[in-house]
Image (cartoon, rainbow, N blue to C red):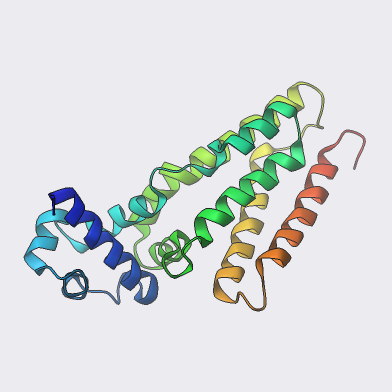
Length: 202
C-alpha cells in the first residue's frame, strides 16, 4: 500500500470504532489492531489521537458541503423557498445515513461532548459555511421583496436544529423514526416555516 492508501485504511477502521465507542473510549492500540498495523505507524501518520479524530471527521465528510449540491442551487435559482430547504435536508440526510454505523453525525456528537476544540473546527469549517449560504439566499429573497423582513440567521438556525434532531432520531431509532416519516415531518416543518416568511403572513 502507498502511504495515502494506508492512511485511508486506518481512518476507515477508526471510523467504525470511534462511531461505536466515542473518542474517549477508543485507543490508538485498538485502531492499529483493527487496521492490522502497528501503533507506531498510526502515530507516524497522524501524530496523536486528537489529530486522527480531527482528520477522521474531515475524511467522513470528504470535502462535501451539502448546501452546494446541484439540486439546492437549482431550487435557489428558481426561487423555490421550500424546495431549497428540503433539497438541503435531503443532501444532509443522505450524507449522514448512507453508512449508518459510521455516520459523520455520530462523530460530530461525540466531538461536541468529548473534544470541544475539534467540534469548534468542524463548526467553523462546515456549519458556518452552510448557514451563510442559506442566510444569503433568504436575504436576497427579502431584498427582492419576495419575503418579509426577518432575522435570516435565526430562521436558518431553527431549520438546521430541527433537521439535525430528526436525522439523529432516525439514526438512533430507525424503527420508530423511519426515513419516510422523517422526510414527511421535515417537509411539513419547512412548509410552515417558508409559508410564514411570505409577505402578509403574521
